[in-house]
Image (tube, rainbow, N blue to C red; front, side, top):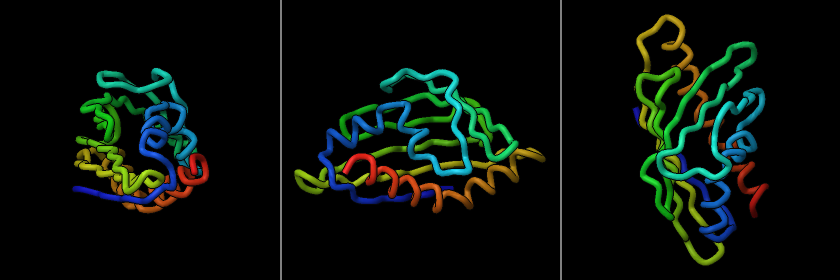
Length: 145
């Protein structure tokens, strides 16, 4: 399955890229009631880095390990190494629209796990992606415009 979301932010391309490279930005743009608890991640992400974190959906902990791949000035990919999905590949792309505006494009390719708990959790997460990314767009604009 593929999910795609894009939005415009009134900020220079380099500012948007630097914001998304910081591991702390993930927590900042994640909507309540989800809580991100970072276990391990470098302050600034680069190709080959790993982020280990737990997403708390109420009392349910979702442990996740992601590896950063395909890093360039126009984006990067995070690939789930361990977590609730059989496959999770998230491409973060950034494109300058003009000198003061950047398009942020998120594309997620995923496959659900065949598991009595993680299958339904994955479906719930899939259904929540439009709200998650609407919040991320709103919060990113508030933080860097």
